[in-house]
Image (tube, rainbow, N blue to C red; front, side, top):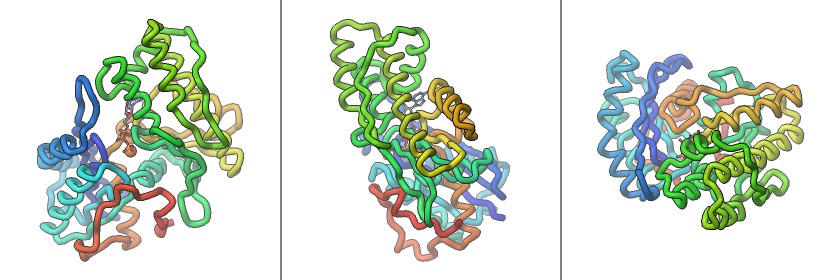
Length: 326
Ligand code: ATP
Ligand code: FE2
C-alpha cells in the first residue's frame, strides 16, 4: 500500500502516472508526433526533456497529491531507444534523490502485461502489439516467456512505415484504421507466420508495389489490417492452445485498434476463453502502468537504494526479467 510515481520514456511518449493501492490516480502523457517523416531518437529525447516538468506537474495535480507524498519513483528501464531511456532515467533519479525514496527499475514490456490485472486478468496469454514490439507472452516457471514474436519489424512500426510511404505522417496506425473503415475490398497480401512467429517485410514490399500501381489506399488499408491482425490472432491462439491458458490480454498501442479487438473477441468466444482489454490510455505507452508494476515491486522491496548501480537497458528482453514479485 504505497503511493508510487511512474515514468515512461522508452520511445515517442513521455508519461507520468501516479498509482496508490493499485488504483490509477493519474496518467498524463505527451507524445512526440510529426506530420511527415519518422522518429529521430535524439529529437524525441529532446522532446522528453522539454515536457518532463510540465507532465509531472499535471500528473500530480490530476492525482490531487503533492510531490512529498510520493514513496517511490518507478521508471521504464528498457527496452527502448537509448537517448529516450536515458532522459527518463535521469529525471527519475533526480526526483527519487530529491525525495529520498527508492528508485524502482521496471521492464516496459512486463508493465504492459501486469497492468492487465487492473481489468481482472489473472494468468493470461498476452498479445503485446505496439510500435517496436510484437510478442506473444505468457507466464511460466518464474518468468514471462516469449512464445512468439515478429522476426523483423514491430507491427506498429510496420504500419507506420507503410503510412509514411503513403505520406500519411506519424503515427500511421489510427490513419490506416480510418481508411480501412471505408473499404470492404480485400486484396490478397503475403501472410507470413511460422509457428508463433510472424514477419511483415514481404507484406510491406507488396503493399508499396500495389500503391505505386495505383491501388486505392482505402483497399490497401483494409487488406493490411485484415491480413496483419489475422496473423497476430493466429499466433496468439496457438499459444493459448499450447499453454492451455484460458485468458487473452492485449496491450500496446496497436491494441487500440477496434478491428483487432473485435477479431480477438471472436477468437476467444469461439474457444470459450476470456478476453481482457484495458482502456486505451493504459494500452499505449504510459506512466501509470510503470507506477502500477512499480507499486507491486515496491511492496516486495525490489528496488535499488544506490542509484549509481542502476542503468537503462535498451535491449532488455522480457524473458531476462526475474519475476520475483509473484
Ligand atoms: P513500445 O515502446 O512498447 O514498442 P511504442 O513506443 O510504439 O511502444 P505505443 O504507444 O505502445 O508505443 O504504440 C504506438 C503504435 O500504436 C504506433 O505504431 C501507432 O501507429 C499504433 N497505433 C495507435 N493507435 C492505433 C490504431 N487505432 N490502430 C493501429 N495502430 C495504432
Ligand atoms: Fe510499449
